[in-house]
Length: 380
Image: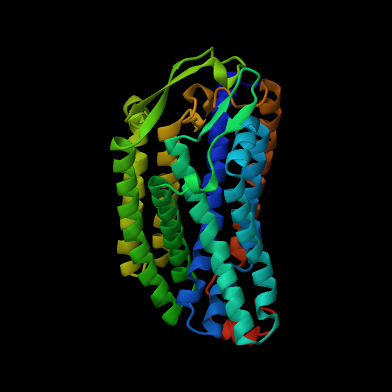
């Protein structure tokens, strides 16, 4: 093997993080555009302009989502099993909401009936709004701990329910997720459209960025002062294979800030998150569209990195039995599996980045009302 077991465990934490950030940066603006569709488009032609800004690329962007799910299954099988058991209803709602996207894109413009098209517009809104909300709620609950436990034979029990996920902090994290992707989608629309649509997108970007800053700051204060974090007290050698129940975990207020004290460079993540959103407001106001979009991406990535840095090495903490918490040290596949999959990712990830970059180069430029009129029967 190229690396020892402990190093592979850290590498796979980073791989999954990269894939989640890639998903948020690419499919994230698709979600943002979808949730803004009924509000920024005032008539059918304008809504078709908005849809066609993401029409050529949204399917490719979902590659990141599929890759992240595959890596979660392959690298962290215990997390995959626990998450899909505990969050089953929430994940099914997310999946059902995502169904509206391919059907909505393909069938919306097939019939020139305002009622038909309006119904699919709200379907695309649902497909853009519900998944970010659920992902945010899920992350909010991870920071608080999930009510599951393993017994001595590693059988898992889960004592929560769907409505238990809808607690105040979970909902705050959900709204933050919606706000930051609304900001990301609006900055994308601002630089891909012109005229009234671009003006409305610019206004939405500014307001969504302000809301993102406010909610992110509130969540940070809440995590620091109102939520008990987790820290590992004792565990076997990280370079060995061991079951989650072999360690002991303590809960303590402010424990999620431990890594920021231990690794001071991580403090750059929350600073960059706030700075990125502030730059979105400034650059959007000055109509620097591409720079505003890049600043939005910086803010989105930094918000995810802030949560990841706080939680490391925890992946799925247990509020029911802290010692059952799943971490990067004990929830992973075998040493050989991680080593083989490492080379798969090293080969495939650059290919994904390259073909994604090529696609965006091909479809660069603005989508206009004239484009829709000239492509009445071929555009979405």
